[in-house]
Length: 294
Image 1 (cartoon, helix red, strand yellow):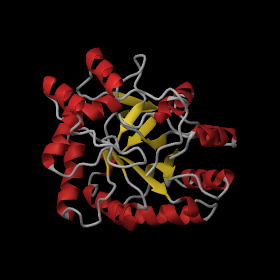
Image 2 (spheres, one colour):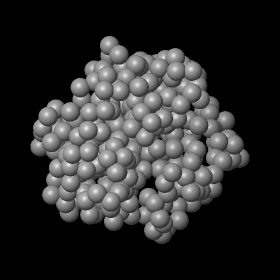
Image 3 (cartoon, rainbow, N blue to C red):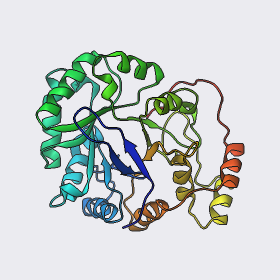
């Protein structure tokens, strides 16, 4: 198993601090027949073997199909994984979130989630969702809660809601071609000791979707350092700032070589020259932008 850079989730009143690898496993589009189910299951198990212990999924992915794939992959080895799932915002009511979580647990074949996220802001008041999350925690169904696709104003509103300060993470779209969160959202989260989870780290989707894998500067830098373009982009996403890591990237991989490439990246840190060249090719905007989402 590789020795990976670690990201710390802060202690809560009920859970101790925990360290997680900076590269996890995403499951968006799994369980939809785009790849053989056996291959998806094998890939997740391979990732676990190689130290990618965080697995992220959602009730939305494949209408629960991805959760079923994850459940099969974790059969007999649930304790090897830090398991994350998400609830639709319209299922995030005081009672509906309880029912949604129970359905996810059934598909996943487990009795608890390590982290349960509100998938994006919705019309149900935050205090209702937080009440449901607390009831789920008290029942042992979830260990921690977090959010996804929350911009800075959403995070400030959450923080001002009773219980909201226990939020563990915010999962957002983040890649080299979409750096808007660096203006205010990421600094706010760093100030509050809250890591980011980066989805679509290879620029697969979003309003600012760009073809980065074959960009000349990306391919040149990757070749010079013996990396694939995907590895370079992931290494950039999880790069430390001021010596501190605060991003967990969750790429999806099904092909065995891609899983191995992601795991090998856990031992890679980009040098300053590479970071400077990438900044020159893909500069941060320096201003607040609307949150990029899928």
